[in-house]
Image (spheres, rainbow, N blue to C red):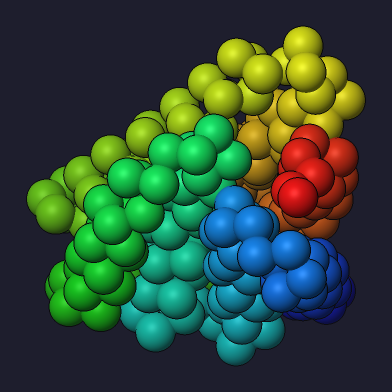
Length: 207
């Protein structure tokens, strides 16, 4: 059941990310591309949860989960918020960071043993470089999302409130990941729905 719920959350996040990609193709708004990529990364992380719950956790499943959930989702969300504010300078640093994150997730050594619950990063990864890179990326990405949402909440009250709620739910899901894949999957699904609603409500119409 845990694997099924996590996989259902992955399908939902993937569908919402795909809808944002369709909007991007129609409007060519760069923030939609970044947000769509973030929700797709969130979906892959949730699929890794299902993988770990169904087949047992090990280095391959955890590398996928850590890369897409721990390293790149929040920075991509932050990039979308900055692009919404026409901060195009943020694109190249974000792409460099994503490349670095991929390299870290693929190459960093991991230690065991592996259990049946969602692995805690501190039990399998050294602080340098993997956990430090994730810490920097998540702080920067979350700060960008929250800062832009608060700064523009008077112009987009509903959309930005949904975005802030989605970020809070995603953070709660990460903090409570020890409860299991099913519960974390529920947090993923709720956060993805809130974020999608916020992005589509707050994206300005471009002429």
